[in-house]
Structure formats: structure tokens, C-alpha cells
Image (cartoon, rainbow, N blue to C red; front, side, top):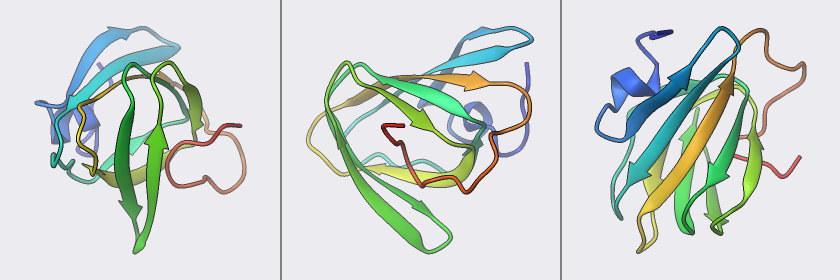
Length: 115
């Protein structure tokens, strides 16, 4: 396993669960309830696949963004450190496919993007 102090599996083990890992990728399941918050944690470049519709707030370094996503969406999440909060009235369920290796060049957008 590739655990570090800011690894979401370490910071929030009640919310993040390891599903699969090899030399190239790590796959995490994320599940929370309305009002749940995460501790500060890091993600490498990842693809997030939503399993439910949800609303959340993602914050980092004094910046924050409110996100609303539907079930069945796939979004790019550039390498970043953040906290998250379920601000809606539904459970959040999603899967992260974390890529191993160097992140893509350029500034990462906070939260997921459609690109």
C-alpha cells in the first residue's frame, strides 16, 4: 500500500476504503452522509466516478468551491490537497482511480473538472 500521513485512507478511514492497488493505479471508494467532513488529505492525479448524485464543498488554502454532481459522471481531479464537506441532503458515493507517477504539468483546479 502507498500510505502517507495525508493519505485519505489514513486521515479518514471511516470514509475512504481501498478497493484495488497495483504498480500503476490505486482505486478508492468514498462514501459519506450529509454533514460529514473530511480531514485535510491529498489525492494524486485521479479520475472520479460518481455512484450517486451529491453536493459538497471542497476547500484548500482559503479557497473553496461548491460542487453538484449527478450519478454516473466521470471527472478528472488534478493532484491536490483539500478538505471536503457533504453540503447536500444525500449520501455521497464515488470511486477514485488514483494514478501513480508524476502529476500532469500545470495548476490543478480545486475539486473535479470535466476535462
